[in-house]
Length: 323
View 1: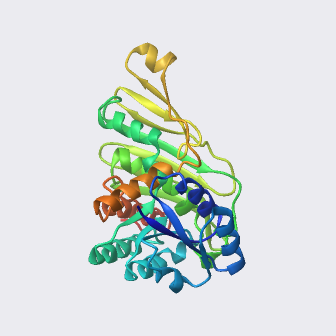
View 2 (view 1 turned 135 degrees about the vertical axis):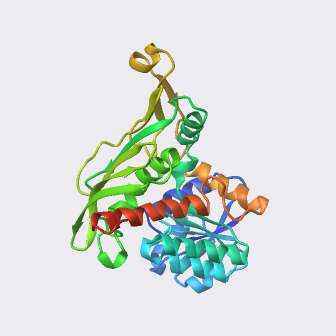
């Protein structure tokens, strides 16, 4: 049984803690917020015993084993390192940090301390994505040659991502899902071409092509307009479409097998979302903690740093700097 401390009182923390209440053995014992009144309101809503505006006080509590970090992304690295130094395991909201180097720094600190660290990439643990990735690995659509994925909705900027000082980035907030899907199915790219729109110092959208010897991915992201919210992975013998919203969806169409299945009647795969969808990821964290693992095999250091590296390279490519 893990005792959790929650760092951050925003919407994501609210939804995750609601799901954590249904994970066997998990208990939230304390919450931190920059404003004490908000921390107390959050605690009252979720029946959390302790609310504080002192990060040191939360990290010093003996009844906190693991912390969930859901503050503005530019603070993730420093808070995660403080938590690890205090002997706490960490689950850090994506993006885990602002750069690949900072992401690796968190894993380095966790390894030295013998503690668990993971980025909260809930898509990797969604039962729909687990099944789709397994079908692809089993060769159902043949060798993967292309991926398309986009995430764009005109709700940007939000308070936590509109300020340059908060390292706001539609790429790291939304495009990260498209990059993750591409790398899980195609691997890391050899070359990248990209265009990024910057408004008042903030990345608000863009698109990129990630190319390798075996195929390519076309991805796009935006916080100012709608983009197609589905995704598809195609191979030699068919393709799989993830219905909107592809990163959090519950339905996929498998176009593979007979001509009928490919062109007219694809197999429909459905995994109804339970709660807010964070449960499978949280259960995976609990299982890793119970077994003494310091990272999860599905989304550990290698996968997380590789995706962060591609995000860095997209920015560099847009600036004409990627090699």
